Image (cartoon, rainbow, N blue to C red; front, top):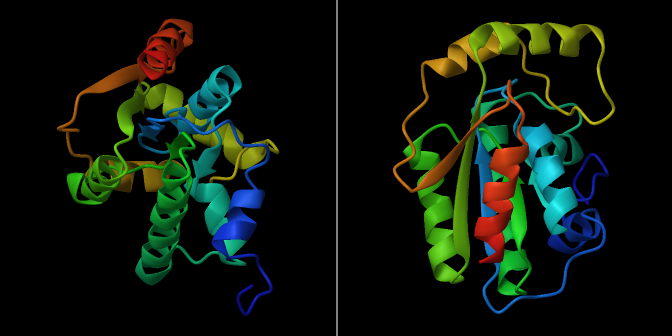
Length: 195
């Protein structure tokens, strides 16, 4: 545990992920990226229901590691070092995983490409998006009616600020418009994980 009494060991964090699937010869790492309010966490939860893979959610993990979170650059760097270590531990055991995090730049995604290659994991990239007016409404609702499943503190101003940093994913990826029915996209990603 750290100074705040929060569980920070890899074993403690893995235990917090719940029941893990059986190890596989070639585990999968599904990375769900996108701006706040674009439905990353919702898509990740639906994907976990279909695959049984645990979700490493950056917003939830931040709140486990830091109480209260400050969202400083130093805090984010520590958070993502922990996320990368956790994913490496899981893939090293042959456990497939879903990562739910913004990952808006190639500089941040490069580490994920490296981890997948190092563990011979099949990397499946997913980018979620939605029209800005839909995102704005979602973030407004989040501020006024917080769901228990929602761990993000991002608001419309943060969305607008982060929009300027988005870089194209250079790896093959699926694009999901979460303002539409996500079922077809979900099916495509599940088929890719199962092939």
